[in-house]
Image 1 (tube, rainbow, N blue to C red):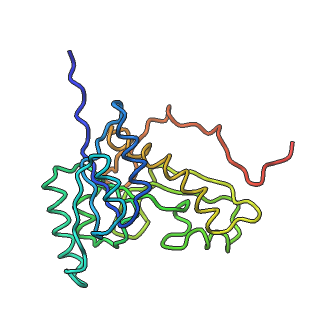
Image 2 (spheres, one colour):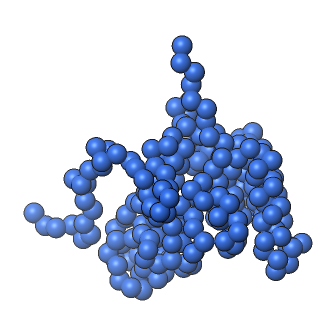
Length: 226
């Protein structure tokens, strides 16, 4: 009898309520999911998501950045040791409000994912929904990508697009995008944890096989009449 593949151990890093963390935890309850959420870690002791994770019987930890002042690498050394002590294979950033140094990012190259509320490379950084509305785009969305030293510049693993509709505000657009974030983050993690998608030696996406891709599903906004 063939043994079941060992599931990857995932740490989810949060700074607040962790709605994407909740989506990852829910997905990982499926026996078929190729990863287990082994740790939820926050840089803020009062992060609401820690209580949510504890309710789901997920181990939690806090590495407070404040005692380290402006020494980001000192904070990250404690963070890195905490992750390694927990036997973590993959790190998922989910509203982790810290800019990570190249030292930390390079230690987790190809094993750290982030969810960003725009169709990267458009609208890197903050206030993505307000900026999308100000630019008058018709399509907006979210991206799961590998983390690289340059902010929001890593290769995209998965993206979802939503239409921008008349009367949209940053709040209404954010809510529509967030629904898609909760869909694609677990799906992207599954691709990486299963080995279907990886970061190659040149820093590019390897996989999934071409047979799994389709060009038949297209979103046009506004819809074309007829």
